[in-house]
Image (tube, rainbow, N blue to C red; front, side, top):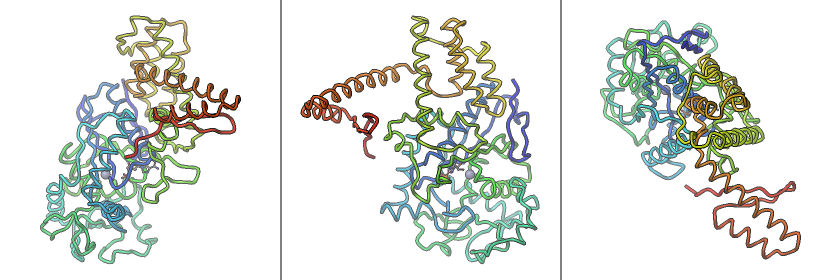
Length: 474
Ligand code: AMP
Ligand code: ZN
């Protein structure tokens, strides 16, 4: 089946044709592990997971590589500010290595809860410094670098195609360049490949290099690791749209300068999740994490469903009201599937995916059309409402669609456990309301205490009592 994908490089929808017929190499810029991932970051990883699953549905074997940035990412993508990891370590009074290990673990906990398939390779920047040094040496031999103030810079004047991904007009940029903070740069868009102590005196992650003891720039990490795991030319490189103008632009310049070949065929970018108050940012604080959504009584899969409701190239506005609507919809979906299982009886025990049905086929066509998830979900709902088909046939098509949606639609054990709990808590809340109406406050309090002991807190609101599961603190 054909697969169409929007390529940022050409600003058009293209028929996907990988370099080798059935295999796809895909690199995704991973998290900078100086803090928890916020739900905006997680939207990007859900989109990349969806892309991977769709490619697999389309019959490709996907080699998915994701890095973990644990050194070198400054607070400004264009070399300004200080190292995010160092700053976080100082603020939290822990070593940079501890910070990196702690937030890497938290990140993978989140992605697991969101049912994001683990990449084929997850590689840490700090484990690949020799590859980065080697790449900088290649660039140096090719005449693409200069050393100034102790740092090694990439000289964009030597790479005439600089800015092709972001459609940057260099003449225009030069004319309107802001006052440059780094006086060592020949051109404001030159970027650091290797920092030495000359820039940051208190850097604790340092490596020996031909240019002195120091550490790599952020952009070189992704080029070095993707070249290492995926070779000189591969199919897909992903990230959020904020990466187009600096990070990916610089990655292309240094990689193509080093190899002398066109590098990635398809550049695919996910739009941002935005809040009512504007952009969500990890470094500015005040961001929402998955843990916060759980504290508010949502399942991580409610958030996954919420993200799938919008197209990856469209901004998604987050609000708790919209998330509530997604939760309601997902619960309804699970109820209908539970009903189908009852109708199908024993046959429901081992349901295998069937892509040949009409709804599954339409679903597949929509997903293969630049990941049209909202139309894909409409097919799922259509299937569940279509009583003309036998229950088991419908379940088989649900199983197929869920391979891509990743909503654990057939995970009955977990859901029925939740449903049982919900029913029990609802009956205790009703009993407590009745006790309070009868002024039997000791019974009302003992019900509340009993629930707290089981990790459930009640919150009395003007329109009734709601409950939440308490989280263990990290
Ligand atoms: P970082 O950990 O800051 O390097 O970001 C990880 C990923 O999240 C990158 O692909 C970013 O482009 C992406 N990202 C950052 N902010 C948002 C947002 N508000 N919505 C969606 N993706 C985002
Ligand atoms: Zn990257």
